[in-house]
Length: 230
Image 1 (cartoon, rainbow, N blue to C red):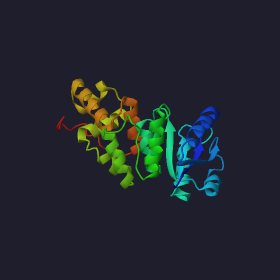
Image 2: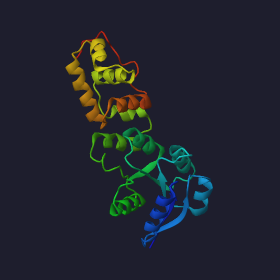
Image 3: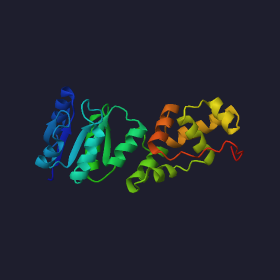
Image 4: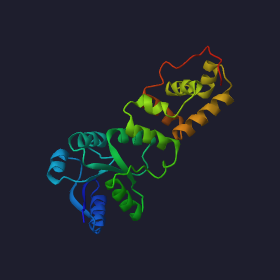
């Protein structure tokens, strides 16, 4: 039997020891090393050649995203799974683009934990359960095959008006201010915001603004004199 060689990076000692002990009970899994904070990560991966790197998304003294990028740059054969409570959609997108293959919620049950590791080891891409089946999951699927954020965003098919609303939200405008700038009713603006949240599987205006800043593709879409389709 080919064992799944696992490197665990987790700075919480209780979690690190507990996860390692749990994994060691599986006949098809082998914890080759555990580290507390991503220190000497490249040397560790080179030494142990893990097939799976389990990485805490919120390391206190290290940038988890940079660890993913380094891992995939130097050791592309090692697949990375990040662990978090409930990662934001923007974080999911960033980590998938960096090369992450799967996500495990820290409140997942044991069966889900094992299943994710085995699925990723077999070549699957595993998203957090709360995003599976959403329109945002389609963005992620597209992110796996395209490199440009603009292409990923375009896959959601935002209307011109929705793109204008996104840019104004990113600039800090309220619904009333957006309505005045685009010559729309406040009710219509609220409807656009609702549609944008649905399309991006987001929950708040702050998340829309963060999405706009990260993607950088909504600039120069404003046309305050246009009265085209609302």
